[in-house]
Length: 114
Image (cartoon, rainbow, N blue to C red; front, side, top):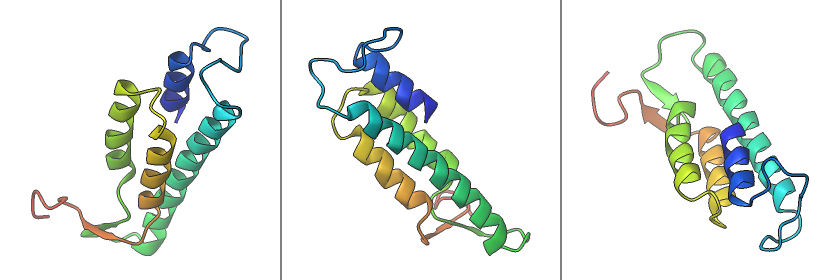
């Protein structure tokens, strides 16, 4: 989330300056980016806490929702390669929702059998 905000500010030319509205952005973009980052962190914390409760401390054979590490693995490169892309906040919201979804994903991520 911090990396996302930093990249968005760096891409808008706002990092290290007092300027909060650049000419190419629409009003409120910084606030939307901050809300997306906060929602991502909130979903990460909820997902990890729920994992402990759902499995009652036992060793599970599946994840409930996509793992936080997998979401970061998908979100960080997108943020690095396209920090100014208009759909990046929506992508962050989608990944956040997948983290707190009730999908059962095997621990081996369909690559290895656990």
